[in-house]
Image (cartoon, rainbow, N blue to C red; front, side):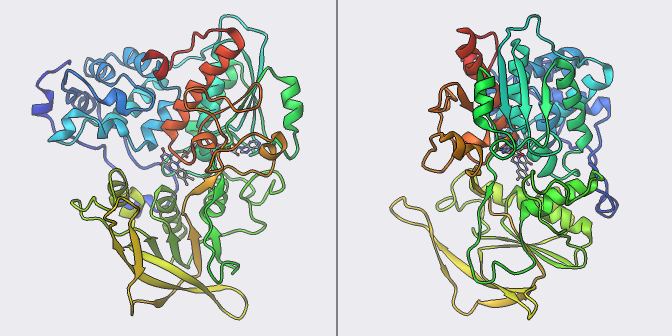
Length: 496
Ligand code: FAD
């Protein structure tokens, strides 16, 4: 590496964040950049460890020691080309990836790992600033036409790769703009939307055509698309939210997290929050806000945390987040094995901004007033017991802990069960797996219907942006092989 003793000299440092009171006044990103000397120092912590596990920890197979070395040597153009060779959208992963590469970093065994995610973000931002990022146009067109359904990270990655291979790519998106959950799930304070716009402009320049408010299976027929294209990639995400079937679920004030988050992202973008409800997903006929309310977020993951940050920015009277699982002491891995317990212990920037977090809590009932409006929750504390025979842990209610708490907005953030089946999945009659996702092997990405492939959350179930990009790339190679007999497209799988 550029500086073999770097890991002995420099400690891990994060770039400065705006103070909580300041950042709660807006929805923009609030993490600043490292000054150049700090960026070089952070990359110098990469320690030439012989067998770098960060490569394999990253679903994209990012070539991390090499780009760290280039950053240390201030060769940012080279760093950009190394990074872009495996990752189509480092500006997304550099902001919001939980960085499995850092969990795999060898330095992390006895020191904080290298700040790989931050370094990645710096490389791509420097590359855009200095003009290294250019539209990647194909040399020749193959004359084959491909439809990609869904413009989340999986659809965008598949589209980018297939276009680069020379195919004519049309992306069909039911929302009014591209990005999937990057656009209308993840709040702006984690990912400013100009970052997506900048990438979409580049993809358009490369030759990809986007069709918006195109809800396949609703106002566009999948069978028409099948007739008009030589291959189809289904990348519609995992959009059916897990529900909580308890008394009072129908009350005014109980909503899925995505109803709330999507509306807010539209509001921040200056759009009509209620427009296009008949075409887009997750748009209620009325606005949902947290201002002045006692908000309870049910679910302890990323979606829940995004509801916390958004509610605080709305000016909620209080924000509480419940998790069904217990708060694990680091040594209790018997009923909550890796990687679940560190995920639940994770403190996000939204938690830093203020929220009461409670673990091992079950919600038993939504309580309403005489007008059908939510006014409280009936909750109970849980006792978890590890199983001795390898079966999942069990919980029981702790007697005497049942109580009512005030709540006028409950946000259900308990994950997603599978893709929405009504629409093109039903129309196509594509085979589903046992969990209700579109069935396709993780090496082939091919459904049971001729020339129909699938990638991202629609295939693997709810997951991460980095996995969606990886699946989009791997799937694109399989589509290219199907159409051309072989493929020039590089992927992690193809490099093994
Ligand atoms: P999606 O991003 O869901 O995109 C699917 C697209 O398909 C959507 O645009 C949808 O409108 C479109 N579509 C669906 N059906 C149709 C149709 N019939 N016709 C046309 N278009 C259609 N991951 C992280 O790594 N880090 C995070 O911090 C993080 N935070 C998250 C926060 C929230 C609130 C949520 C919900 C998820 C978060 N995730 C995070 C997960 C991550 O966003 C997803 O794993 C990822 O976006 C999946 O990508 P995808 O392309 O498969 O699907």
